[in-house]
Image 1: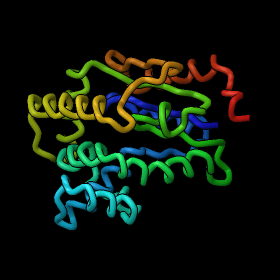
Image 2: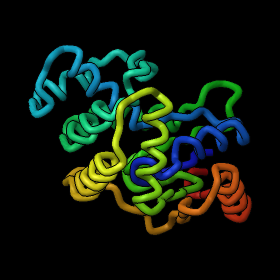
Image 3: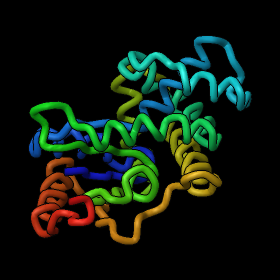
Image 4: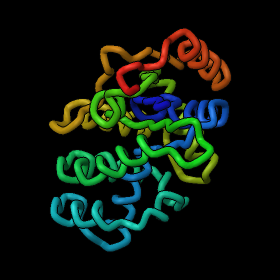
Length: 216
């Protein structure tokens, strides 16, 4: 069983993935953490984010343990990650890791669930279930602001809103694997939903859809 979750930043993907992974006994991967880890690796090394060759080197050799670093969730690394994600070679380098993860769940797990920007369209087009999570950008900005404040990171609503707008543009207009909804994905608008309500809505979708027979 493979579940693909896509959507823009701060739409509620991460929380939904955690709940679905626990309920369905799935191994979860936040693919955005891979790009953040590469970006963090570059920042630690003092390399310029615009250096395509350096970005590729880091994507091929980054320490996977960086995906667990608390620094991964800073606004600075989030912006940096969206910039290096524009490099097609970087995306290709991380693609094979994501594919291997998706198709090889650990023993005892019922499958995998991945979230990102291009899971249903590029990484796992054969996914059994595809959900596109979205929300009004003002709501997303408020959620991100709350996250940053809870982590004791200085933030201003207007700045967070502008950063999200910039990220949306970068994510949706990049040449390689842009953010877009798969034509067969279920749309989950979380603008007016709590985390539990979003989870229950996703549950109903999965229960109503037959498993993707193309993978069997």
